[in-house]
Length: 558
Image (cartoon, rainbow, N blue to C red; front, side, top):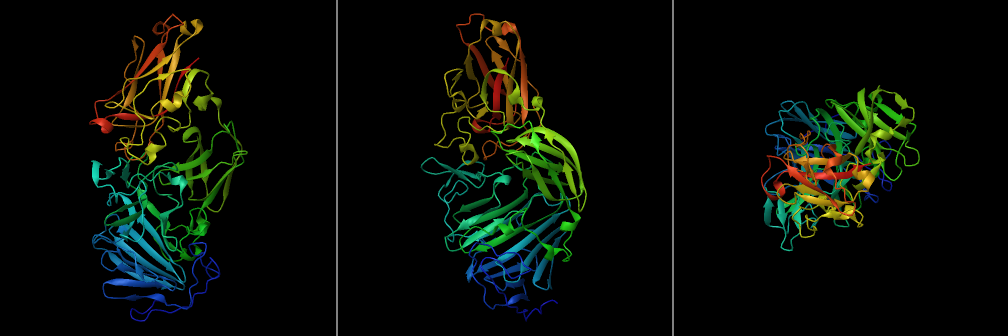
């Protein structure tokens, strides 16, 4: 039964501890405030549909364009800054907006061309559930931004630029007076690392709980902006396709739910997290593209052999329509990935972030596809090759290299970064820590690695390998060994947008191999051979936006 525009339906909402009454999802926050008798229902104020969740949350959705125009929790307005609302993209424009109530659920539906967006409220909850169905590329990207008034939450983390008024790159990277850099891009976290993003004052928290990202692109290790705060206000994001540093084509279809959640200051309840959240109450709401749990399947693997137990392993599923992932158990490699849409997927086993095994798997609705033990072939892990020397670890990341950790939350010019220049002597100790995570044509190209060979080693040809995780502007390494110069390798497929300066090394892992002839080596074993690594490319501009690349590992094989 739908509520009358002027007479909201009133329902009692009883809350026990942190869980809602039986049949509803748990409230956000471990100590969610009890909701005494309150009005659950909706009304029409002429310009907006006004939804009262019957707890401590009242929100408004524009009848004209589907914007979230008001977000009032415990009497405080949180929504909006600079005359802007919360919405898909930067606002959809004129849309068809409707509202309906089904028992203890209210659904606001927004249709804009081929895109459909939904807001759902549940009786007695301080949450808004959102879905976005993008059918094609008529909308350039897919994000939802919750715009939050200035001054309600404090934030001087890397993703803030409140205190950093000087622009150093594009219009979105800033430097403070102390030399530390700030940008909304500096989120630190990969998708796999977080379930919710937000702020807390200690007594109230506002978060966006991400969806399972089944229709997003980039896989479990993708990084994108999650939140920002500036002098005019803050933003919390659900990024589904941003078009920056993307390694996959855009996927279309229904994405969600993701949740705007208010808490009593703690993090949202894990019952709202992707992989945990269930929404049987939404099965009959008529959401375009919605697939209930009964229409999904599961993949489970009894184990993975051939692992290096020093690393975490992740199993991913991907096809043009959807993506999923889950951790492999450290003891034996067991994994289970549920809620998967029917289809045939490429299953990839990642050591760290490096793909070391792929196969095909078919998922059917209502069934579990069980896989026998997966064996990672020794040859699929480059770390298994015998090396005369090795710098870094083959894990698909620049971890361990100089400045690597800092680069996920700072600009390369940040005052906290060690000098990007500096050469390495094999055998001196600390070779990896002294080798730069990134190399740019205009910054530190020409890095030198000094090493000795035995007489037997110098008498033979050897393979030199350089693994990279991404590249900017087609930057790739050309090497010189003493007087021998390699050819210029072809650039592999990599994202075309900024990466190294906006907190992400994630692109397409690629290994460059160089066959160095015996004639290249010095025959005097007391002398150091010198490897010079140059970044070559005709693209890019200057400084940290010149052609560059991120290093995974480099070694000289036996």
